[in-house]
Image 1 (cartoon, rainbow, N blue to C red):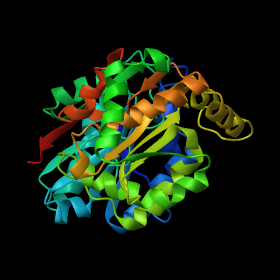
Image 2: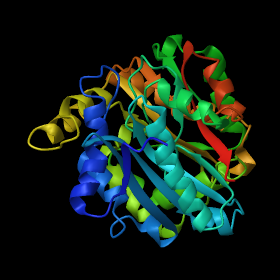
Image 3: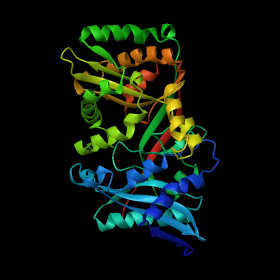
Image 4: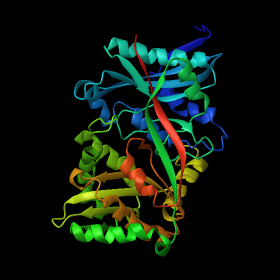
Amino acid sequence: MDSSILVKEVISKNELYDFVSFPFKLYKKHPFWVGPIINEELEVLDKKINPVFKNAQSRYFIAIKNGKIVGRIAAIINWIEVKEVKKKKIRFGWFDVIDDINVTKHLLDKVIEFGKENGLNHIEGPVGFSNMDKAGMLVEGFEELNTMITLYNHPYYSKHLEKLGYKKLAQWVEYEIKISSFENSPEKVRRFSKLILDRYSLKILNFKSNKEILPYVDQMFDLLGKTYDKLQTFVPIQKYQIKYYKEKYFKYIHPDFIKCAVDKNNNLVAFLITMPSFSKALKKINGKLFPLGFLRILWARKFVNKVSLYLIGVRPDYQNKGVTAIIMNELQKTFNKYGVKVVETNPELEENTPIQTLWKNYDHRLHKKRATYTRLIE
């Protein structure tokens, strides 16, 4: 072990600020890294604010070498995952490091130590506290901007982990979809959409304001659980977390870019949430909403030529029946109205083949891949 490296647990507010701001120094002037909003990151990690800590524990560490911070990591235990899902896993997240494998080892050893103290048998990351947090280390697509809901990292991160005996576990793919005019959109999708709407007596909901969306938000979270509960990374979202996520993301939502499908009883069958791409705006504001950052976010929300696909949910009895295609078909009209040319998908687990089959109907490219890494705790 390199004795010149000191790993210090984050205790004070000043240390937490240093923890959050470290990647802004590591990636300073980097052309493809997009930082989060610092105050939002501080709130996510604050045990007095984020309700996830009702069922989670965490410890944060910074690595110091020659008097400078050279790395950071969060050690996380989601007790619902451990006790209900029966996965004896210690998570690591908020992982950033200089290109020094010894620093990486020192940081991961602290996470493993925390896992051992709590009787856990394996480590996995990078992930957050729950499925609603950013996850997955970038392994392909280093010359692409990250979105506000994805991580960016240097190529050497994964090389460090592999040299330390970590193996890939969950793997995600991301696509860039080209949007044409509605008339030139895939005829197969348009024809299929009308057929599905008629066959199942479904109706598409279009929203004019965020207030109109609110009555469906709880149903959306319920559908998220039912949509993804069979996937390997799933951990149930608790009701007390929903309010927190509403407040965190609702201000970024544009009502035109959310579409829902309901049955004849007005029960939610499926939904698709896209958001204006905030990557360029976030890059310009460099983590700070004030004095002008908030205006840049508002501008990006209003003047849109690229959107990010954030969440998809489909009721189990309607899965594999083409409901996602009819919502995407409806969104096509909105995209054309606003001049949207590109949709960037959220990370999709490689085994989630039904949604990836939909993208094959469009001009698309697989432009990013990411993975979590794991190792047994010995």
